[in-house]
Amino acid sequence: MRKPSSRPFSADVTSGARSTPSADRSGAASAPVAAPTAAVGAPRASERQVLQLLGAHGPLSRARLTELSGLPLRTISGATTRLLARGLVTHAPAAAGRPGRTGKVFALPGSPQVIAVVVVTHEDLAICRVRADGSRAGPVTRTPFRWWTCPDLPAEVAGRLGAAVDGVVLAIPQAYRQGHGVMLLEDGVPGYYGIAEYPAWIHTDLAAALTARLGVPAIVENLINLAALGEADGVDSLIYLRLGDIVASAVVIEGRIVRGAQGAAGELGHVHVDPHGVLCACGARGCLGTVANARHLLGVLRPRYGDDLGLFDVIALAAQGEPAVRRVLADLGRTAGTAIAGSLLMINPRALVLDPVLGPATVAVLEGLRDAFTRTLPTRIRTALTVTPGRPQEDAVIDGATTLWRASTQHR
Ligand SMILES: [Zn+2]
Image (tube, rainbow, N blue to C red; front, top):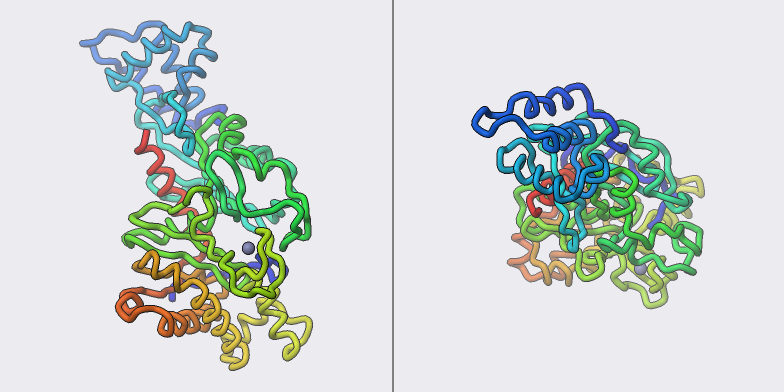
């Protein structure tokens, strides 16, 4: 197992505008203006204005260039076409997840793209600036955050970004249907968050709202999908699974996130396992997520270890080799493994990657998973399957976000 997570979820959780370019960017941006080739002559006034606007504002659409310049759209179209032909501007990625979009976004060539990866979990909001090549442009900043109490998530993200970025990837801890919003949370069912009515933004197109506020392309994706994509480097197909505090999972096939018709593909936490189980936030009852979460885990262990037992204590006890704790964790893996075995048969993935949120206790959960697969899967499928712990989730999410961003720029 690689380095385990140092930040498991708490036990109570169950289930810039780019107004001014930075100095180095503005330096890079000015080069095309100062050095047009002699063969094509000096840029016309409209072309100079386009170059100046792109240098000052970053990537812009024709419509936005028209608005900022005050020139007619036809003039801007002609200027951008000529500048493209001479290599003085290039196409930049437009907002992802909007298949109906036909507008092009233009940028100065050579401008290093810096995107903000915003990771919303059930307990905090983290921001990391990364370059398009995946390298970090700054440290991760993290603050406590309860998304279900936030009245306007796009406004919150925009307010926290501060400095300029070329794009945003927002990771949210829910199944997300591109262009529509959060899936699988049913109003009227309190679920794990203790609320029956969710904020209105969960049923809206968050990417469009972010782009409208920030003026840059935005991608919104389920963070588990991004973690799966971040772990999929070099693996053609995998299932990513988180167990212990919540149950969450995702599927990547041939390097692509499998989203399904509504963005809910791979949500194995809602596999039905107990006909007499409690209600789930999805509206069903007895979902895997209701019997393999922290609340359930602690409920099983507290009669023996006391009511003050928390998830950190469980991890510590497992690390010390406490047999009863390791058995309960292995049973957790068995329950989940048995429930999802059919999905493995359906997909025949190369790997099942387990989020190491339980740190050293992850080993016991892996034992249970492997045992369940030994009992339930055909031999050849099981032996070809690698069951392994992943990297800390946040690292995987950031890598997956960068991968998704790069893929979005190649499709337009
Ligand atoms: Zn459910």
